[in-house]
Every structure is written in C-alpha cells, then in structure tokens.
Amino acid sequence: MSGLQELYQQVIIDHSKRPRNFHAMPDATSQAEGHNPLCGDRVTVYLMSKNNTITDVSFTGSGCAICTASASMMTQFLKGQTVEQAQSIFSKFRDLVMGAPQPPDVADALDKLAVFSGVRKFPIRIKCATLAWHAMMTALECKDEVASTE
Image (cartoon, rainbow, N blue to C red):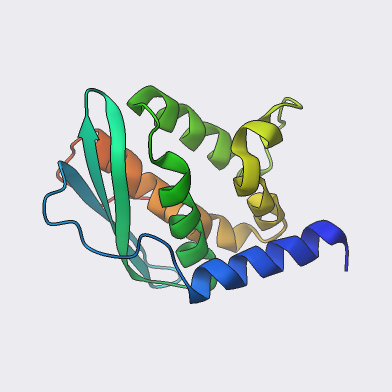
C-alpha cells in the first residue's frame, strides 16, 4: 500500500469514527441539508458568519465513512475563512476529488484535504465526499432547498 493510500485510510477512519464539530448549532446564521440517495448519506451543515467570515461551522447527520470524514475535515478547514475563500476551497476540493487537472499549488492550498484525492479512483464515492460541501455552499447562498451533488 502506498504512503498516500495509507494516510488516506487513516484520516478517513479517524474522522469517521471521531467526527469533529459534530453537533447542531441552534444559533446558526444559515444552515442547509444535503442528501445522497445513492448511498443514503444525510447531512445538515450549520454556519455562523459575521462580517463575511465563517466564525463557526458544524454538521449533523449520518453517512458512510467518506461522507462523515469529509464533513468533519471541512468544518475544521472552513473556520475563519471568508465566504469567498470558502467558495474557492469548494471549487478546488470538488475538482480534486473529480480528478480535474490541478495546478501544482492546489494540494498545498487544500492542506490535509488533499488526502481525498484518492476518491477519484472510486467515482461512486465522489458524491459521498462532496455532499457536505454542497450543503455548505447551499447554506452560504441561503437557499431554502436540499443540497444536491448533481
């Protein structure tokens, strides 16, 4: 097993068994649900923002290990980011897991999220990895709809 595959497995297992920021946020400034009917994943992402900056983010729900780990890592990564930075990070993350060509600095910009590059080898899992991210984008846009991974 390559080093990246081993790291990928360790990170996914750790965050799926002990998700960070896994709680409802009753005073969230926005929130959105996401549902992946293919896998059965369901998440709700809660955002607290002030002055165009995400000050807190959490999630609840149930899903496969990849979905839960991705949501957990997303919440850690987005705290303190501006809305524009969060939108940019979403695009980079989505492109990474989908296998789109990446400039060399993208892996550095995504830091630990780069371990999800292995998802591209399993196309059915891309929706699992991106579900919470789509819900986060829906919450940022204050849309009153269930997020879609389409």
